[in-house]
Amino acid sequence: MQNQLNIKRYGSGSNKLVAIHGLGSASSAWDLVRPQLQEATEFITLDLPGHGDAEMRATLDMNPKFLAELIKQELAKHGIDNFHLIGNSLGGWICLEMAAKFPETVRSVTAVAPAGLWLVPSKKRIPQLAVSRYIARATYLAAKPISRIKWMRKVGFQYVSPQWEKFTPETCAKAAIAMGSASGYYTLWDAFLGNRFDSPINEKIPVTIIFGDSDYTLPVENCQERSLVPTHSNWHVLPKSGHAPMWDRVEEVVNLTLQTCRYSSTS
Image 1: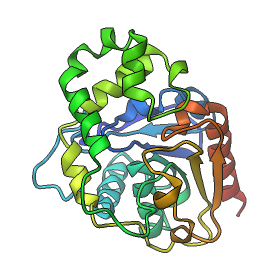
Image 2: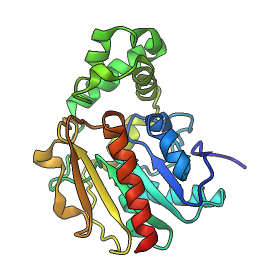
Image 3: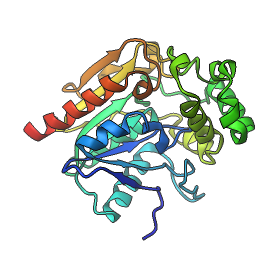
Image 4: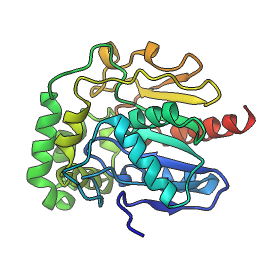
């Protein structure tokens, strides 16, 4: 069976938890939380098109709504048709779209620093992210030795997290390789320009939103609009955390995710 999205399964819990990474990332983004989550669930990762080990197909529509449909179809091919979701950044947006479109399939959503929650959608690429992509593209082949150098980790991750100094060289190298090798980076980015998340989600589907208090990628001033998510959502802001709370606050993200999964079982 062709595995277009590099779907991988870990653990063997009765609850299936599907993880969707963000723009310029890969399934390795979940490595710090995976050990605990796979103890409590069957933890399932994937790579978005043109990211990680998933090929980029020129004919694909990369709009978040379409990606929601594509992921649902690919999961079904693996017999995964009833599941919880966790997603970061663009992945969080896709999770919300999946919950809105497939309420019979999605059991809960934990959206970690989700994109798409802006009142006025951007129509242009963000210069800071474009520079990060340029640097990653130019250096990713040497990411492992470069990531051992502290000032290089600072250059690459000080805007990702206020706790960048605690990131291991391995975590930084994986992230740099993921961004630098993402052939679908700009295709995905351009596909969500001018769009936002504004779809209703059935109140029977538990939704947890997690942001860091120091998210410079999606700042609270214009990218964390609470009116766009369901009124029954639980919204959490984690201290000393940036755009990747699953790196900064591992225990909190794991606990909130499992709480959301458990709540869906009792609701």
